[in-house]
Image (cartoon, rainbow, N blue to C red; front, side):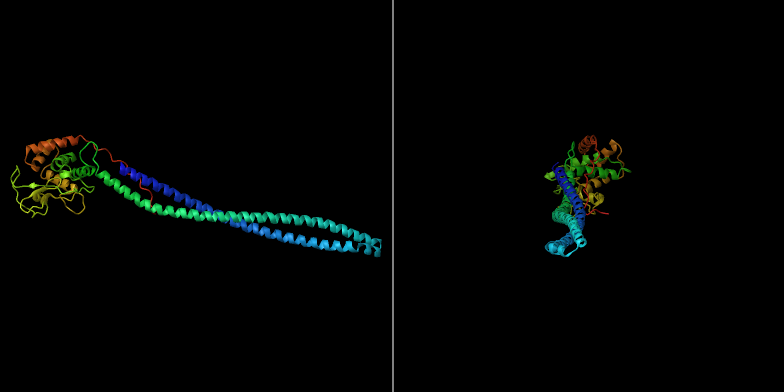
Length: 363
């Protein structure tokens, strides 16, 4: 449960980082589009401001000309009118009236041009300010996106680590309702399944031997590791012929049992070295045949039980147990455990936890 919580917490953190990165990418795209729009707006308002400046300058130039003309006419009006006849005096008056009318129109044009200049200048300033704020936001969002990308890489690795840890802890956890771990059950089921077509030895029949011989890999205070290896080697007593044992001299030079005088049974399924030499099997397909590995030991035990026999009935199973150890007490003890295990129904495996997408996405 602790490992599951650690995995789920890390996976949730990764999903949050992925969402943050995705949102940052989307915001950066929107900001880039807004920057383009503001740049175009600045150019347009700047051009309009230039036109307003030209129009205002032109209107002011006309007003200056009208002012100069009006001044000249007003200054010499009395002298001029005295020297002109009636017709010329009327024409001069009309010219003055026309200049006043033109001046009013030009004044209106100048006022309109100045208003446009003020408006376009304000629009340019506003667009400049917004574009500056947009570009500052781009810097901030880019930094956030880059942090999220780094966190995503780290958390993707962490999720893989947490998932591996979860698998390891699950493998070494005791299966509810039994006295063995999941890795032991896997070894039993795998070995039985590999021989289902010919011998048909049941997984629980192998589990009964495992319980009596090595307590499912925990004999002597050890434990079964996630790969099926025992944490500490299980080595039986010297087979000297005493204490009800057979007398078996050394057959392996002490290679497996560390005893160069007598043989000793080794591993969680307690194989005598000479028997292991004949039936030892690479049950986990790792290229190594090791009696201290539950997968190898259980596969070898299955081959031993199935040697020259099928195991389809209770009688067949008892005969196999007797060949394993020529003791009727042993047979009944192992069979009792096996029958109890047979009542256990293996549930379907839980759904595999989701693995977050890698970054960058794979094609």
